[in-house]
Image 1 (cartoon, rainbow, N blue to C red):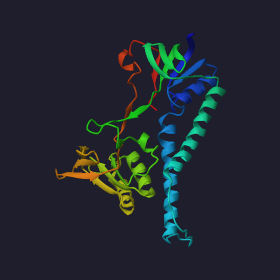
Image 2: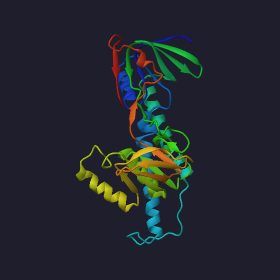
Image 3: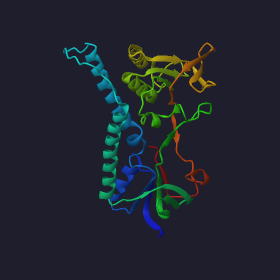
Length: 298
């Protein structure tokens, strides 16, 4: 395959990468962007946008349930209420699809060449990309690395089976009856609250003394009140030890040192994200000796 030579190469079409590439293209800079998945990155495809869509659907369902129970302040009542999570996820995917197509359109309008595949560095100015049609070599004067991040996997709770990350949680087609959320940060609380409103029995396990550990206690108190009102269980100062022998429950060590077994259909791990570098060749480069080189953590 013929090599591509450009002024600027952007690796990653997330909110950092695609904005950079679009602006460069608008300024007349010969730009290429490489993306393994759909344009838009974590925020658009498996983060902010789809989670907010799921939260919106959960709130609509909760409002319908209040009408069913005769708790609507306007006196509206309905007979029967249920949710088809598969159709909800399909609706969410439709929203994401329209937005990712919009990003692709903006890149094309700015005359940015899009290469689909995963980039691996050969040296500081050359990458190879495995595309559907074979290997593509790209040489650039300047490289911008905007590869984003991946969910953190716990050594004692590897992803797979009942243990899922936020990415898998946003693609579930069946509502888990019992959902354990490991990590009481904003991602865990957002998704946990959404699934609770849709009918799951949710328990949040947080290792620190409070949920939202990076926030002031005064701000956390009203959140805790809302979680309690929603019937969401919260265990703080509790550590996730691992799965029970039958694989159908999570074993936690509570603040008083005792072990507790929590049955779960799904265990959602949301303890954080780390920069995505594995397989890119970044770890093999002495970045002080190559360049020009820029990093965007989107």
